Length: 143
Image (cartoon, rainbow, N blue to C red; front, side):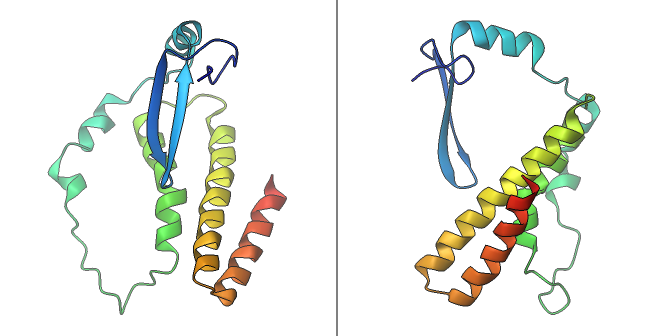
């Protein structure tokens, strides 16, 4: 596997992770890995990191009842927006953070809805497919 950044050298470090349910691999050569560690790693907000280890974060204090809550958009918000909110809590922002976050939000939305479209296609749910097609077209206009 070639390095994700320079695309010339062989990757010595390869990371595998699931991104929106799809196994993804990224790899870096020694030179690019050094550059990433020196210039591209954001400082962590240590006080906020401690919050994720507390019982408050893991306990759900809300009485969720399907009768009084609309669940139709919760799945998309969790998969598209929640990772960015957590990133904002954990990491110090720089002058380009909002631009990168906007681009990431658009890409995550496109990936999520494309995946949902494929599921609807497998289920032969034409009504859902049409609704998702409209969403995807709106997202593509943002690119």
